[in-house]
Length: 248
Image (cartoon, rainbow, N blue to C red; front, side, top):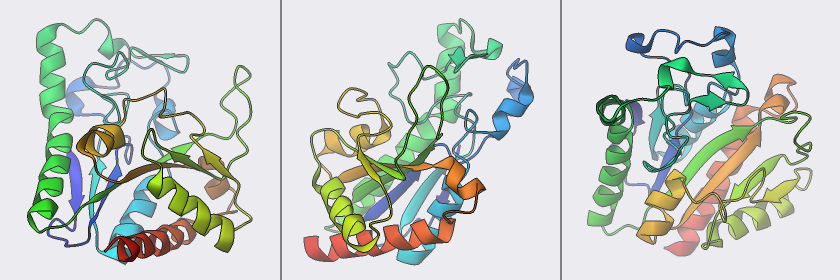
């Protein structure tokens, strides 16, 4: 289940927004959550990122693939073998509908709500490669400023996440540092892809020898009006356009 923008684009960038929405398919009810309001915040999805992805896709005319369901149903930004692909618990919240799924139920959820997204990513990569292009995989996410007492505060405005291939991250860092020095950049923050090697950019970028980057923006700055969706979409559009032209 996904939303696809610009499916026939010739732009060599594929935008991914795995946690764009917080829908729960009717067959799962409310997942058994004790507090359904949890879906309205970061636990349910990445609130600013759908709009940023949509604006960015329009600006550079790139194909974009956005998840439609909450990460609590199944996490599109995980690998099939990951324990938290279908989380039973998430930051202190129990998810009874995900408890002890048997092989049949697990396979059905993957087939319906996970596999189509990743099949579409692979299709778009293959489509661009057949045109002689090398697609860049760009995945957009957000994080919370203060995740709780057990975790340190997160001062960064943007996190640049990668494992072995840091070419795109270095390009982003250089551009933002020069043109937008007010923003604090964290490399592999608020977590590191050098240890958490389970994300879509690893599967579709690094493991396919394609350029990639996963970014994380801070949720709260949008709530406070300190930063805007349009501002970040403009920044990303400028960087990606320059990167494409330099690589051509």
